[in-house]
Image (cartoon, rainbow, N blue to C red):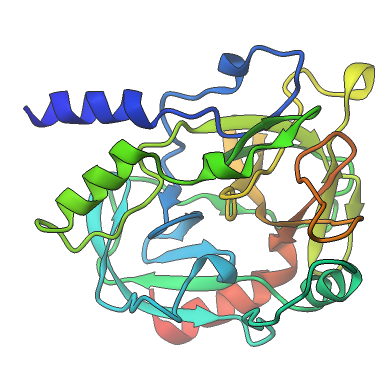
Length: 290
């Protein structure tokens, strides 16, 4: 019975997440199984397993203003674990500003100036799957990356359809029903996981960027992030082993805030540059134990 319910939910919740080329069949972007280090965060967004006791995520996908994460369960590699502690980067600033509906520049300046990264310590060591290695060089510029996400539907012509990042009716019913039997928070577990490729075109201290190209300048599975894709890992492969380069964080806005549609061709996605935070990550892990 349980397997049947999950099968029905997978069909009902299926959505063609991330923003894709308009001239490529959407199903070519789909994946049946998530990478083993990919972790659905409570409510929305993604973390990645970087150590047997630690997850790495963009800080903004941790909603401490309305949810107490400490001691709460989280599934890692299909097995329930618990959150022991959360450590935000000291230069992270939670966004509580009303940015209005016109000039995007103050918001862009804010996003550029802080560090959107946090570490999550797990109560129990994870031994059944492998953590992902972190990129340790400073040569990200020009790398072709593979990115994963479960966010909003869209293509380069239309941009994302914002409403598609939200839970559908059946998913809401399921989440309401299961809260009676588990402390696990709702996640994007049953959304369709997709992947896409892009090339890093700009690098600075905190961020890596890439542009959503079209036509002959685009990669065969060119894509970009949609709403709800935060934390989606950008990876490269060395000898078929994944290496973490970045985490999906935000998009550049070049028009009035109330008119901007993310995900159109030529839009620029911005990812946390993991290599810039390796020293801080190592320090936190050492100070707080493996």
